[in-house]
Each structure stands twice: as structure tokens, then as C-alpha cells.
Image 1 (cartoon, rainbow, N blue to C red):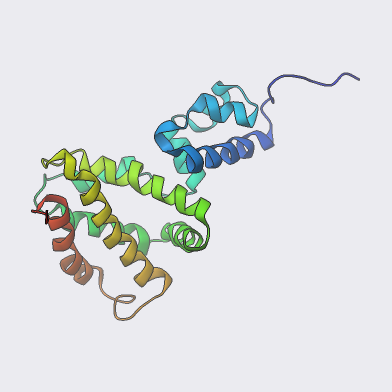
Image 2 (cartoon, one colour; image 1 turned 90 degrees about the horizontal axis):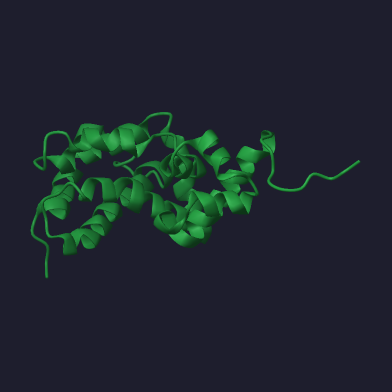
Length: 198
């Protein structure tokens, strides 16, 4: 009996091997520096198999994060209508996703990120590259301010997620979504398009 050499063929373990390699690559190198070829090499598969299982690098990252909602489908709805009221639309979309059954995966990610640096790195990359970059790139603001604006938006959204879904601080935990949209939306609008302190 001869032992097979070369790349791992497609089998039930291949998908998980690719996901494990992808999680490590995204956590260690970040989304932009991680490559399909490098991930395939670590997983010992042909890069074509990565594309076969996951399609694009964005889709692979989404699968690696185990996040049930594709920001590529959600963010365009937030951007529709221009910059006016984008803060409210962002909160409405965020709360709508997290209040749905799909939000359970996001809650699990936040819980894990608090105590696990590896998960925190993945979540940071996900928020930065898959959500904030897609929104910020469409704004008519000084490009030098984009990192600060994105970080400020993230503090509000992740803080809201922590208080509403993880810690369950009342009255935020049971608040009507429209109240949260009215309360948090203007703050996000200022972070996204308003003047920032220098």
C-alpha cells in the first residue's frame, strides 16, 4: 500500500482544515494581508478548493467568523439614501440583525472576544474590514479622519451590543428598537459626518 503525497484531496475534513487555517491567518495577519494561497498552503489544499468551498476571500472570512449575516448585503441598505440619517439607518440595521435569531452568533462572538485575544483579533478585523470600511469609504469626509470615525462608531455599536445582549442592562436590554435608534442614531451620525474635536 502506498501512501498518498501532495495536497489534501476534497473530503469532509477539508472544509474545516481551510476554516482553521483561515481563522489563524486572519487573526495573525489581518484580512488584507491574509491570502487565499497562503491559507490553502497551511490547510494543505489547492487554492482552487478554497474558492470551491467559499468563493471569495470575503465569503471565507464570513464563514471563519461564523457570522450569519453578510455585511456585503446589509451595508448597501444602510448607505441607501445618502449621508443624511445614516446613523439612524446603521443603528436600525444593527439592532434588527442582533434582535433576530441570527444575532445569537454575534453575541457568542462578543462573549468570546472579551476573554480570548485570538477571537478579539478576528472580531476587530471583521468590524474594521467588513462593516466600517464599507460604510466609511462612501462618506464625503476627510480621509485622514476615517480611522477615528470608525473607532468611535465601533465603541457605540459594540457597547450597545454588550449592554443589550450580553450584560442585559435595563432599560436598554428591553428597550423598543425605535427608542434606541432615536437615542443612538444622532451620536453615530455625528461620529460619521459631523465635526470632530481636533
